[in-house]
Each structure stands twice: as C-alpha cells, then as structure tokens.
Length: 180
Image (cartoon, rainbow, N blue to C red; front, side, top):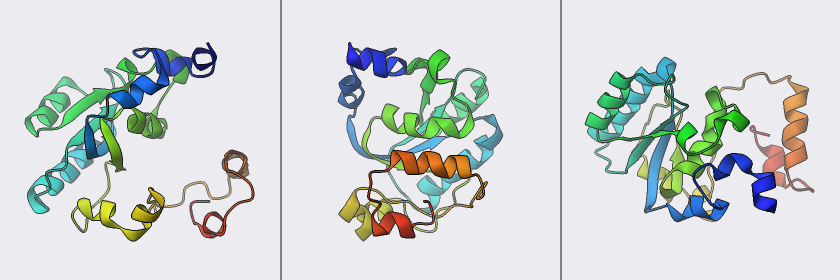
C-alpha cells in the first residue's frame, strides 16, 4: 500500500519497485536518453563506441513516448544493434510528466543494467567507455560524475532543492564538488 501511494508512477508495469531491479539481466551497459533534437548526436556516440573504440558494451536509447523519436529513428537504432526503450511504457507519464532532461534517472531505473553508464547524446568519448568502470573513483564510491557545462548557476531554488535532498552534514567531497 505504502509503495503504491508513494510511487504510483513506478507501478504501471510492475507490482513493486523491486520488480524494476529484477529485470537487470546484464552487468554493465550504456544508456543514452535522447529525443528527435539530439538524435544525430546519439547516432554519433553509438558509432564511436562501436567503430572507434570497438566496445561491445550493450547500449540502450531511452525516449519519452511516440512523439519523441520517429519510426525511422527507431529503425536505424535497431540496425545499429541498440535496444530502444519508450519510458512511457514502463512508467506512468500522466503522473510524471517527463520532458527533456527529466528522463535521466528514470532511464537508469528502467535499464536492464546493474551498472549504468549514463551518457548524454552529445557526449564525445576520448577513451573506451569501459574505462569509466575501471576508474578509482567509481570503484571506491560506485558513482562517477563528470563536469558538464553549468546551466543556470544563479538559480537559488534549484540549489536549495538539491541541498534539501542531501544527507546532513554534507561531506567534504560534496562541498568541494562543482555539481553541488
């Protein structure tokens, strides 16, 4: 009952939140959330992973409903050996109202990977993606965040919201982080 009340968006296909993790059939993989606007970048990163770095890590592209990617896009991704996931078939988007960047944490939850390498579609790899899983910081903490451009750095509302979600007291690593 409590789970249904707190996470109604998660129970569209699942009886329980634990069911989400039961579908993790592979240890590691790449998840790229994208839509029509960034599709060409997603194809670029997929081809780089396969043809430049010769990586065999499985790749999933997650999108938000039928209007987010065209049928031709889905067909091309299939030819590239990429699994596509319509996030609205897994989570109840009438509750979540996902758009744009909102998809990222839900794509990680919906992926079939125990360890997820979440990549923006416009990411450019400079080394094989497997290198991230071997990083000392990742092995020590189980997470690795990398620098992206800072958007809306003066938005105090977002900074307050992030601070409200973090366990107190804040660690030295969090306080020193550009993300925070």
